[in-house]
Image (cartoon, rainbow, N blue to C red; front, side, top):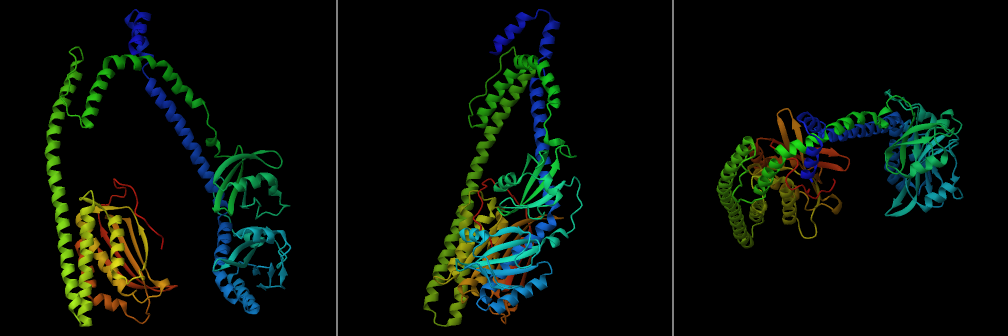
Length: 593
């Protein structure tokens, strides 16, 4: 094809000037195409950035109101178990809700509606029967968390926002807990000062109902119709779209999801508002690259291909074959090719020969090193297992409980060390080891060895996919083994709901460089038990401090008070060269704490 094009150009142009004109008119074809593509992509990127900005502005415009509603959702979740416990005593239940509302200073009412639709437990007012209301029937049919507005609350008589959450007792629906916020409280929140603020910013629930504007408010005229709002709310994605107001004027809308499937922020801008220019892609910037592309097409396709490109393609094919492992002799270019290209081809040929020779030597050396290191780890693992077996035989012959406990601890430490070496020789890369995978396997093994049958602790792992040097992985694994052994020792007699161990692995940036953070947590069951003194004076604590010093880091162990009781926390930080995205990107399995 290229030869036919070149022959046609030669026949169509006789003189050198004409030929150069043809060549120069075709010079910028790739540059023109790249310029058109880049310009279009820049415009699209600007459009996407403008959409994200509008979505953020819509969410920021109602940030205070959103926080108040999310607070009501959290309060309903917090009150549910307390109301469920006090609900048989209606006086105590009402007192509980009344006290909570008075202490909150932001809620106007809280009430519990039983399965029959009767709200006999409330912070104020007389019992109310919702059994025949349409809202109650919808709640019974689909017991989900809802956010609605009422122009005249049943208990307060004022416009309110009502947050309703279902209450379950062992997966059985027992009723609904409602918390009300007055419209006055909601509108009293100061709005953040932001640029390009939307003309109207409202809250929409999952049914497309406007929560923070009464029906008679003048701003309602700047919103789409009720049916259009309902259609928008059915799709909870954050997005920007164009629509018409109730008066038929075109506007730009930004929907920002606040509470998944329950609450959205809707911002409204006039179509010609400042900052919306990027939403319209103009063809004008594309005209100049198109003109350049048309003017310079021939020179790129003909002169570059005929004089240089076809020979470079030949060199490229040779190099690609070499990169794919084909080590045949490198061919020579014909004698009519430019001397620079023939010299380049010869240089690549010599370089390929040197690389092939060096590759063979390095592959042999690397294979020997990998085999040797794997064999070392394998033999260390076998020797440690043999030692563990000897200890186990001796353990069976002992009758002294204290001696058995000491020997059992040694036995578990030896098995833990063996599991570390097993994980190391199983890795494909010995220089860089996936720390999350080694830690995950080590935690499972130690938890299985240290727990009695049927009483294994719950493992809560949050492990970032990080790759560390092998010489750092060994002391890190040993330190973790000691921390887990100490944790298991204090969880043997724990009830089922309190037997858990949490292990977190993450990366953080410091002024001195990257650092790795390892955190181990477990509950302390006996408040009077001095776990800090015991752990600080034991062999496990000494080993932990020694391994932390070997890593060049700092290890801190302390008792932390929490709502569910005391926690023992081990926090290790040490500097490391971390690969946050290893060659094998598949992450370790994690479960949230």
